[in-house]
Image (cartoon, rainbow, N blue to C red):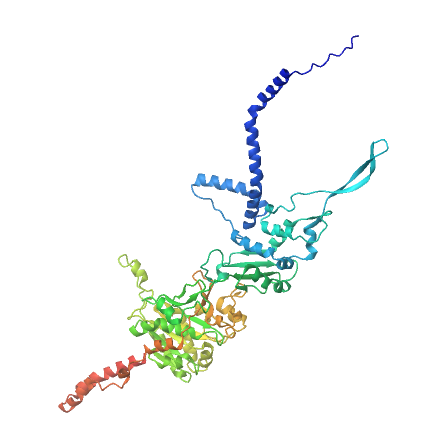
Amino acid sequence: MNNEVTPTPTPTAKSLDTIGNNLIDMVTPWIPLAIALVVVALILLMLTPHIVKRYMRWKEVYGYTRTEVFLAPFKATYRGIYRLIKRKPAPFHRQLIQPPALLAEKEELMKHPEIRDAITAKGEEHAWIVERKSQEVTTYKRNEKGEQVPNGTKTVYESTWSDFKSWASAYPDTVRVLCKYPPNYNSRTERFLPRKWVSLMARRIIIREATRKEALGLIYEGTGYGYFVIEVYADHTSAAKLRPKLEENIKSALKLEKLRELDKDNPRKITWLALKPGVKTPLENDSMPTGEDFVQANPANDTLTRIPFAVSETGKPWVLVPHHTLLVGKSGAGKSSLLNMLCAQLSDAILDGRAEMYAIDPKKDGEIRTQWGRTNFFKDIATVNEVDKWVSIIDKFHELMESEDIDDSKFTKATLSADALRQNRFTASKKTPLRILFIEELPSFMGVINQHPEGKRTVDKLNQILRKGRSSGFFIFSAAQNIERGKLEPLDPKGFINKMPLALNDSPYLLNLMLGDGAAERGYDTRKFNPKDNPEHRGLGYAVGEDGDPVMIRFPFFDDDQLVHLLAKHIPDEEEAVTTSPDPAQESLEPLAPLELEPLEAPELAPLDTEQDDIDTL
């Protein structure tokens, strides 16, 4: 058997060239693709951190859970199909939890070491400092023959490369700070996970836009957010312990001018309204107009159906649509603002006959008696010791209301029109003036009138005015320091549609009477106002807004000079105040008496005197 081996031919230069050429020919068509793949890989490598960071930011801004993130592409596909079919955008609700611009403010808080220590506890470090995974590996050594033989085992800890990657977090600056100043840990046997730490802090701090109710019409003319809400959740401690550790540090970290706590009663959460320098509120003393400036800028309309009355939390005027109105506020709260603003807005209408006011003042030193009642402003007025006159004024007011004609005849096709429908809607004019009965200190008034012999009948007439007066332009306005349960009976307080509480005494009954049951729970609690110690609370209260919910308002203040200017309009000039000379007609009739014209004197003068008396008593 021939076992000869054929020798391998020695490659020649020619054969090597052939092989090389064949390889080049085979690879050349794939070179562009390889270059493209390398370029794509480099682009992906460069873009991946940016894409991941944007994704994490997007998830944080809208507060999406993992499930919502998973469903997002399907929802987007549905909206696209809906738009193609319906030719309009699909219904879509996306709640902005934390605006992107405010995430930067949140990072400033998380980077602050004292804030960081306050919102996380030392016992929670196990969440971001964990043991490294390890395995036992056999070690070898060489024996005398040079062979490798087992020499025992050693523990090898896993190595990770992504722990400190800041781009994988919605708060990369905070991660970089934690990596630069890490806590004490054994880097060989333990892993430090800064993103876990950041994630825990981010869940406990929320920075969001302030709601309309929280902002109270704050004004900021700079760029970005001048005011916002900071919520800190005390999951690891109590709000009482956390509050003193955070307040000054937050103001320092964000360079805030003010930090107002919105809800002090929540034991698990602290809510602050953060204000940067330059933020103003229309209800602050520095922003409030004077009473005179407010009336000049916002006069009542000619028909007195809309009367600007106060500054609202948005900075716009709060407009009173005439209705029965009750204002309550403890001493110093600014109750005189109701009378002063009402009289200021109706001043011109009183002078030209489009409005009439009647007043009852049971107080010895009330503004009605000591200021406005000393002019010709009121059509009629009764003060503390004139209880019988209280009754007569109410009788007169009720009689005038009942004398107003209401057209309730049946419509015909010829008479039915839009104007006919509006015919019985009250608008003030010289023929049908707006009439207001102002009763100061309503509980005191009721205590006295209930003891009067005509008290029951008089209160019944007041209730009728409350029920029927609006349609004919007859309204009751009243003010009080406090109203205890049952003190207004038998007057029905529900007849006062406009209820405006200023700073109240600590009475849940009164607060609920003025703003509805559960007012404090809904965030409308004027018992917290303290006008005695805080000038910003004087004239501050609530009224009903256009949407039916309470809106914070503040009455502008009239100083003494402005009141003098208003009161002077209703004081006759000195020459007019002098006692008038006898009636010329009377003088001319007296010489005629000897000429036997006496029969003409009685018929002419008697009706004239009676009519004049009636006019004086209105």
